[in-house]
Image (cartoon, rainbow, N blue to C red; front, side, top):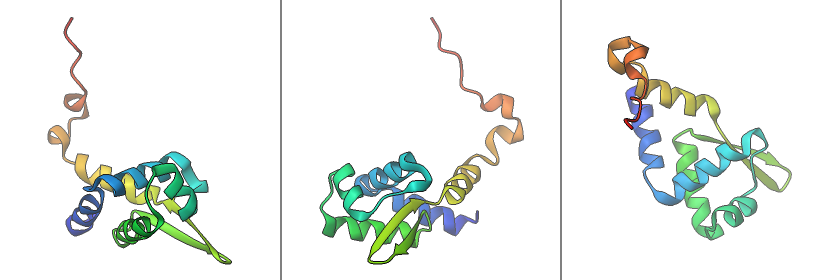
Length: 106
């Protein structure tokens, strides 16, 4: 993932409702959801939801599939993994052992 794409994705996710929608789509997996199902599941008005879905789609974090008169939205898992990879690619100078969480002290 290139820096501009990472910035677009992070900007899209830096809003409470959009983050909730994206997380819900990730939770639903490849089946995705219709706007009505998303609005109900996340508790966002349908008119507001369309704005958030458009922003997430422009950031290429979600995909939309037209099925007749209905649209199914899905998280783009490759894009999500690309963003996580971009954020962690240089973690601890490339030594993954240094990136492990510290053990909690008792």
